[in-house]
Length: 193
Ligand SMILES: [Ca+2]
Ligand SMILES: [Ca+2]
Ligand SMILES: [Ca+2]
Image (tube, rainbow, N blue to C red):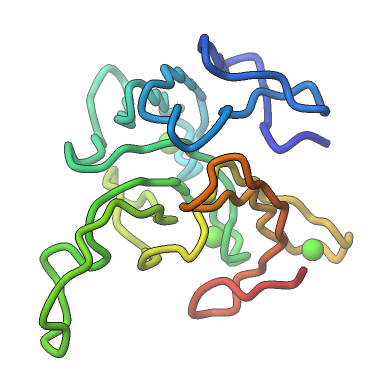
């Protein structure tokens, strides 16, 4: 099973992506990400209300449409690299999961005890749920110690609960890649392997 859940509604098109051994498309390196023109589209009924939402990621912005109405647009100061849909916290409801590059770990909600904010651009995993026609943040990581280039929810051990498989890179070396497995623990994700 590949990391990208390449369905019929999904288009990955770029000139700087190269095929991985699995035949999927991966960015060449972190430095090329900003130049990457990845268009990813997905039709999905996340909240199960019978109306399909349309998820369109283009030029680092994710927009979600429902019945020709824009119901979500990611902030301008985020670069959304990738999104995936699924039950990240195993509560029976699907979420919208975003891999985001942004500056600063806390944004406007900087804790008082931090005198200086780290304004370097780091990678984050942000999780939203959809209720009453609105996306609300469910969980937001602070700066990830390693950027997640791609991620997918899979049941790796067949126990009926989903784990998070992440393709991680390195801030220092864009060519460094590794696969790690995580599981929601109620507060965040704990690493399994
Ligand atoms: Ca819906
Ligand atoms: Ca869930
Ligand atoms: Ca499992």
